[in-house]
Image (cartoon, rainbow, N blue to C red):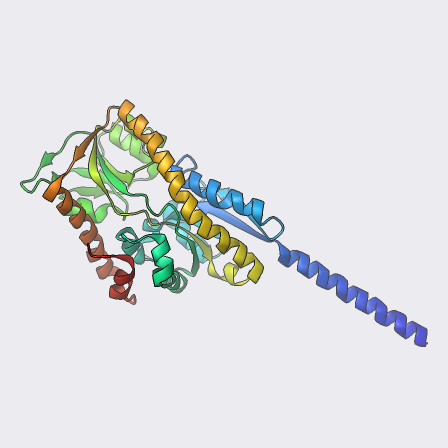
Length: 335
């Protein structure tokens, strides 16, 4: 009898150990799904896959694995934020402008002139993370490609106003939330249009121009249709990596550390990646016959001031519940 009891105890202990081992094995590898808002040919998406997903899967094998599901063909860009909030997918890479109605602080991110390193030091990144958790049920994982600016592209040289700025009065411009405040400040009529529809829109005369990051125009073939790029570049991309908050909270400390470690590295390597993409695109733009309209001196300064202030005005309108002034103090330096 004593022998049987001991044997039973040992068997129970072995079973408990096996269950614990199985539990550890499950916890050891977090399987995460990732979607993107932009097409896979877009340099921003290419950067995310090359500088975040690929190295994370290589370095954190057995701890974290990210499975890339797809882009707009899977989830429309405007629905990406909601898909993450509801936990339909785990990770989203894309511009905050696509869900700006739910997350007005995406305007503040565009209007930032502070480096990502400074934001981690001064608490700005943590403040944005708190807003993402509160408003989007998401964890702000990384702000990659953060030094990439934007330009205005036109099919023909514009008239200039008396102050030297482009006169876009009544001109139809394709715009997302990123560009709408600036274009409307310059008199344009803004048109909602998917990324994949811009080429046809230009061909058919439905729009006469658009705003786009410094990179990515040749990837869509748009350098064959536009003739003018307005300089200087403005804003900084608010393309970020966010993760469903419940999924993030369910990770072990080791899994979180693996993601955060790669995130900080990605925030740096993605900047260099985009610089190379921009240099390559520059060649294609020149070959396509795109000319620069450079706004210099007072005109250039006013153009940038108009762009930045238009965003802060929009943010103030929508930022109910946000401490807008505190966020601005972290993200924007008056020069």
